[in-house]
Image 1: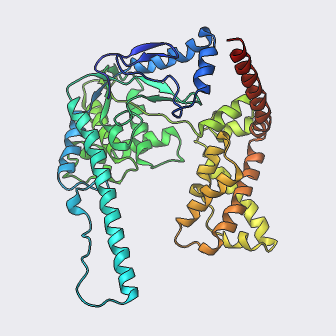
Image 2 (image 1 turned 90 degrees about the horizontal axis):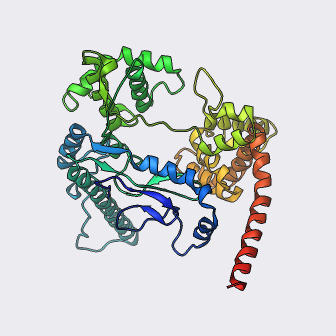
Image 3 (image 1 turned 180 degrees about the vertical axis):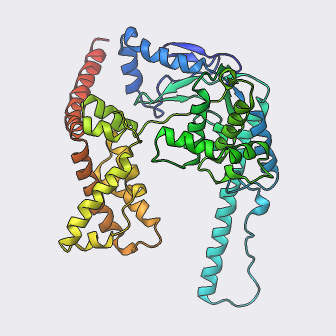
Length: 430
């Protein structure tokens, strides 16, 4: 649960966050001891910058966006909405068919059993999603008039997470829309423009447009934005077509209030603007390797329009495919029209975390099986071919990055050998 008071500051690897409940500084599997041993052996001064970062995140106070909460609860109580990611009640679940008396053929029995299984599975999934949503909304409603805090910890990569797992600012669209900063700040001369840009980002429109183009587009559709804010359930419902509908609606309301204020520059806003890196793992590697070409692909270099590394890799793989198709390679010919951003995204994202060709092949296989029009008999061969081309593409686009990764396993082996030697020495001297 979120805390009703500021969390205890992290002062060591074993003390911080909650007042009574224990919390781990680093998330790891139960029974894993290596992480904690390494943390204990670290000099306190080496951990202070990390602890300070977690403490800074933890002292940020939050509050519930009550108008959005009331709207979500009203839809939740009125049979939900799949389109708006509000799970419907079990009364909307498919009815499990009852076997009619009489003889059935073997084929009819099999079909009947499959339909029963499908209906039961759907009902179980609906119940799970409904209860999950109910739990999160119950927490939000409990905290609707309160100020609260999220203590933070991190994983082995150094990525930080709120300790409360169900209701936090890194959750789903619904959960994020329910949260506001408790401390407001004046928008200033450029704040309203950034809110408009953020609004267009949430809709998924103008993904390839510059920041100025996004702001201009927001000005052009201001009537739809204000209509969404004033009449969210009875108006033109423009916000419902967005990629992130609830965050879009919350931002529509904030932009409308700021625009109608006497002086938008002095308007006190509590609205959080989320920002996401462009494939963070590759960003770190490109920076470490001083890889200018790779850095440009992941938006580390100044550029008028945003770059999309996943689309870039997909285009590179498509070029490889065309060359192989001209050579008469069958799988390359079969893949014509099926290589897109979605197919390669997960593999590109996880390659910096050490995904193997085998793991990458499984990821691509899953994407290909989701395509109804793709000939399924070629899935294995196509996934094997594509993972090779994705790795080849990354090798060309991120030369500095890949060279760092090649040397990383050697450093990891040296580190493990040192750790084992130090552990044995420690045991022998006890």
